[in-house]
Length: 541
Image 1 (tube, rainbow, N blue to C red):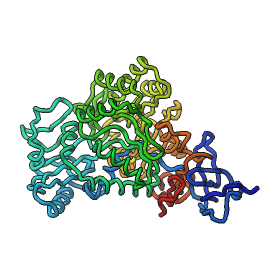
Image 2 (image 1 turned 90 degrees about the vertical axis):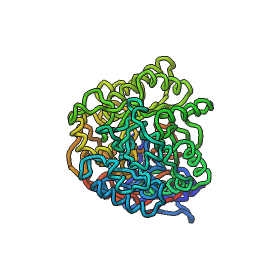
Image 3 (image 1 turned 30 degrees about the vertical axis):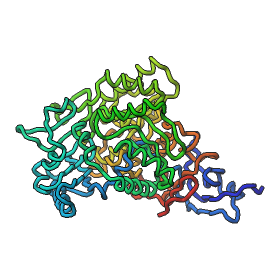
Image 4 (image 1 turned 135 degrees about the horizontal axis):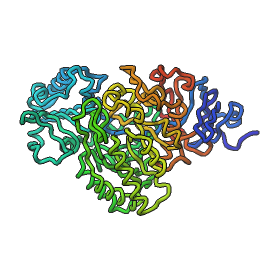
């Protein structure tokens, strides 16, 4: 039978992971314009091949939906390694390494110009400590320095930075807005709002931001990521830039931006107020740029460690987690956002913060019932059976970060001990029918989806080879569903993308091998050979 409409592209001889409701496998996919018109056997797509049809031989490799990264700091990641110096554990081993990078950059800068670094983890540095104000004063006495920890919840500044910021007085900051002092002197380390409010004064040019946007787009396509949920960065200028870039087709990746800036609690509140007064709400936009949830930041990080936990840290019972929002103000904000029709979310890592958000959702939904709200919790790292049951009952979508296990699993074992058995509890979510989506949280981790897949399937720290909560292992098929269909579900777009089915958008990737047959220890060797967005091939290896 000859079809009236031939396909523009046909992919044949693949191991096609459809992620449909039956988890069917297929051999071939046919695409016309920006939609999928056939998924099935090699024989089934032959009738869609015309003289102008491009036929791609997948040679037994995996063909699957594009990854949806449900939590990434998109432009910040794109600026890492260019505008911002990358000092993660793959690039530096010690504070001395960081000092050397600062010295080299200072040679290029005029006195008074900022030097910004990001990605260090004091747990992985040779000195096993944070850098200090003295370390950076020695490296760049005439340039303000901001060195952001990998979690982005804290940073170290030098004396020139404090001077440029107008002077920092610890007594001016409330609890949870931490300026670290030792022996009555500034150490250079600032946490949460104290640090984040300073970031607003470390301004980047529009050219820097645009270059970061384009770089991030290129890197995402190379990783097979076709949609990103941007978890916030530099506020309104970035929101405008996303919209303009999509409209002018400067980028290919689809963007769902959260309403959140990185400039601290009060700045974030003001930003939210702006949107609440417009009458707009989540979902405004189109297939390329769509307004996401309103977000707040309730606590610290898992790796700091600085998250708000109900029980003391296992390695240091005196260490206090940081709780930025309290229950009453969280209840009020969640209620207002919910009533305004927005989807709500929050950075909530420790079980104390997770419980606070669940309680706020319970209260808001009791006061104003709303079906299919799909409210989220970003990270939702430390949980237990009761918290998971409440998440299920309320229909909350947790956004999980299994790449953290790949990178920090050994540290987590030390910080949380048996609590890792309910940390990013993917298996429990599957068993309870909870649709968790997956976020890399880059720049905090590497956005290569293979880090997340490795962490989810093996529950192992890559470098230390320590198991971390192995009871929460899932299959590769399960993590792929979380990384595709569930990512579309959380934005209400599961009928549009996230699986390879007739009528859906042709956001498709080709991997370098059949991932269903790959040894989990070799996941990091799996690469993306082709990425297609909207039916167009936008990346080939």
